Length: 623
Image (cartoon, rainbow, N blue to C red):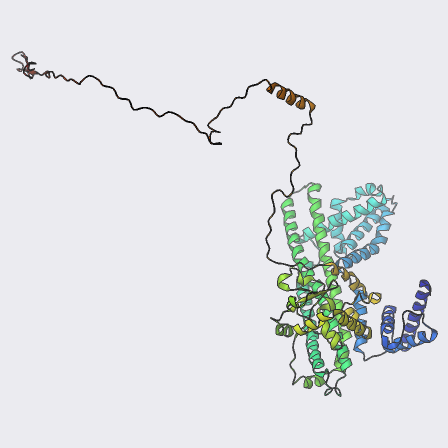
């Protein structure tokens, strides 16, 4: 059958199923019907062969099975599928949501913008009407107050007149359409910045909510509510898991509880837990963004106050960029408000998909059965396996990774949403959390964790066998395809939210170990010929030099700097001992001259001084 014809047949089947359900009082979307059709066809118990063309009887059988499945009011499996379809149709990533929100805002303002840009105002009344439209556009685009509130309009008009007086309308009308649209956006941001600045100074701000304060109160409240919902779901998960473990292979409680329904209920609350974790992650991102934006907003406002400082005139090139930055930050606060509102609504809208639990497994029935059981949380199960680790040497052909030796182990794309693959395959879909500390098995570029060491050893002996068993179980319980993230095995019914997640499979483990390396200074031998000369005149000079050397005599010398560079030897004659004879020594002695002078003191004033000189030197003969 051609592809286009097959699509037409499938659309007709989906439309007929939806009409039959509506006729019986149950309105379902075509997306939901399409998911159930694919789930029914995949289930081998229904006997459909996807490789052959459906006969008329096959089509009627398919329609009947789908209608019966969609009208089953006591099926936890159907509620899980509805939950998955709802989330897939309403959830997008943060960036995509904000882009869509901005696109919708632009489409709503397109009519007002077109009236302004297409205007051909000439008279005073037409120009006044155009100016009022610009004021309304500014208010609608900024979201700061209602255009029907006269006080808000007056404040916005005053702010607009300070940057765009009526006299500028002529210049505005002479612009081309794209320049008009660009100027309208700039005027909106400048007016928004002026009004926010006036509000902070206490001189205006009519109709402007304190978004940072609202977000600071709303985010913790939303987080608390999601945590409460998560804890409630986890309590049910732990109870259902304990009952299923007790009932596996035993039928004592079979008269009280339906094991198949109990497992479907476990899949339901596990899916609810997974979706709440996604929403909670986005709320935490909102909190982180709010913290950053709040600091930037405060710093921008302080910078603006320092620039203005009660001045009567400020250059527009200096102050307009600050108003625009303030406006952009405020738009970010508005985006966070809208995103948080959507996440809160999604959290509330997921709750009705858990309504069957109280009806099928009421507290007064479950509690007595748990009296003699130990209800373990996921954390308790992981603590029980603490210290147990796979020995990689036991597996020569398998690769194992461990948290202590893998830097990015927490970001590896673990299969089956982190549940133990061996338990899912061998215990008819029982979902037990895996412990990365036991070891992460790499098989065919995919990563698996396990709830205990024994499960890891058994799974590693024949991974393909257990993977096929899980695939067969997912065909019977279609809700497991999204819950266990089997988007590669069942690409035909992969939801949009998981199709994008397939990029995570490109991530590789980064192993850690102690190592050292040594690099040679020069790995390759140099090929530089130092005697090479590109200049022919230099070659000529060297040739002349060599020619002149033929007529030269070689001399050598040694300097203080070079005399220790080689061993030198010299031989000398030792000096002879020589003695000489001189004349004999003689000596002479002469008397020492001595002279005595007397009368030097004088005889006073009455008589003259009479000095007497006496020579006391002895004669030579006497000496």
